[in-house]
Image (tube, rainbow, N blue to C red):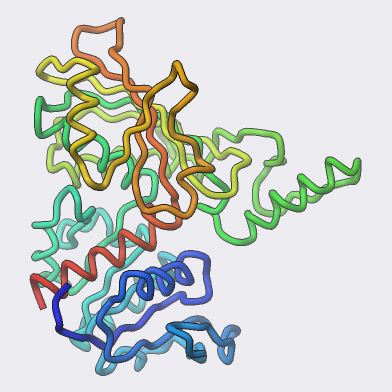
Length: 340
């Protein structure tokens, strides 16, 4: 890590991801001169502990970014659309966790293990986009295969934790589960159907093509990050009654042939990945093992017997950490080291 130090702001500091960003900054010993914690007016006065000190939350306003070098945003798309350009105009580089800027052709969409060179394009708008959580773990696992033998098509089905929707969804799963095991009535506020002991093939809004917005994020973001618009991508995203950790069943059709053993050996070389693939011993990635970790876990690697060049795998990662906060902080680290 560079010895340079910066003035940092975290917008959306009181949310689940914003809170985790603050923890990641501390864990990774990010070199800070100062830190400013920002949120909406209703959170003003709350205190958040950072490096043993309590910091008061300030209201996010147009003047919040004076003398700030880097701002990490996790305050929702509308807030990012409004305030990211204001911050950039002040000379602050924004790393945004919302979907607001991801498909903007002038905004780099970055996973540091996959396309770190794209960070340099932040100069176009002063904004770097952090990808969707389910996309991040997918491309971290598939990038080595894409570089080795090329990818023709990806079919992915996700099993996504409720924390991807936020704290209210975490509370809803907990409350519904407690109510049901005690034979009590339950409430539905966050999701259109009960999430406890259920699976919902519905994440974000449905679009005219029959896909959800979450599914199309995976399609479009995967192509942008892997820098290959020719890759066929189709996704089905499902919300499951898990608190933390997204799981994905992935089928990949490659251009050049690769065996399961070759794919496994390739993935084992990646420091951002952990291969757990001994099904005979009941060893494979689990959401409960990935929770609280920054690695992406891969297992169930096997050849697709229905096509000539096909590989199946199971990918799991913590959606709040690597899928959001950690990836954002990693971008900021590379930005500081190589660009600022």
